[in-house]
Amino acid sequence: MQYAFDIGGSNIEFGVFDADGVVVLHRKASTPREDRDAFVETLSAFVREADVQFGKSPDIGISLAGGIDPKTGAVISANIPAIKDWPIAEALSDILGRSVLVENDADCFALAEASTGAAKEARTVFAIILGTGVGGGIVFDGQFVGGKSGIRGEWGHGNDVTGTLIRHGLSPVVCGCGRVGCLDVWGGARGLERIYAQIHGAKLASNDITAAWQAGDTSAAPVIDIYCDLVARELALMVNVLDPDCVPVGGGLASEAALIAEIDQRVRKQVLGRYDAPLVVPGAYARDGGLRGAALLHQMPGRPKSD
Ligand SMILES: [Zn+2]
Image (tube, rainbow, N blue to C red; front, top):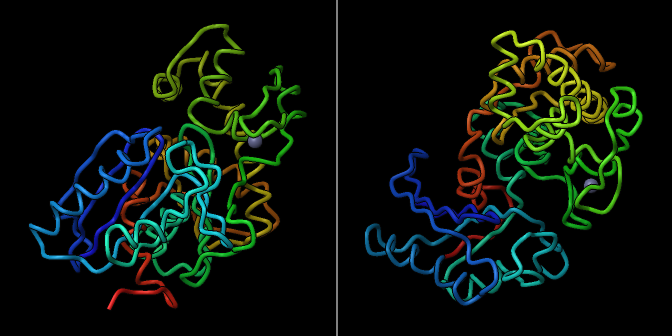
């Protein structure tokens, strides 16, 4: 048995996986965002319940919506004040009495896809999240890359899409990171809705926009065109840099197969390399990739395990 958590700003999910990767227990709770004691108790209660049912699992993997400082182990850039600057893996290892490993949720998603998902047997995997905003995780030969700052794969920040916005008649917006021009503002579900709102002066939910586009609605078509233009341009740069074997997509928009196919075709037209088969594809674990990847963390080469 392998225990795994997926910790996000809204919810904490807990899963117990058997040796075949099948989820045999699944629990979910709201994330105690402000209270660390309540946060720890939420995790501890799930672990106690599973220990009673399955006997103690030696290891716990955690997928976190945030980064970890490689030098101190402290949580950075997570939208959960209760665990800010807290060395979460070390602290939880002590509290729960077993080895706890914590990695970014997009990295965990990439690991799950590289293991048994859409990027199975791929050597270089650039997994992208098209969720509320934009994220990404990179796995090369079964390992994560980088390690200097604890932040990586963040292709939604540091861009300057302002020229593309102006060309399409859109107004730039300040990103949550403080910069102007980041794709994160435009490349997720909220971005799709923002494009619709700026073009049409009306609000429409992202899934209604994509449904209208697929039904041939002429008001949705230019919105999708602009969205795919913005995403494909930035993604093409990442593909030129990494030459990935596969770009699995996670997050809420991963369920929009036609949208992903449109992005894929545009990316493959713009990149320098030749990719004859689809490169940007819906992830096999778009819904539970974080949790599934967390369950694999202790199996990565060189990772500590409990005795
Ligand atoms: Zn940004």
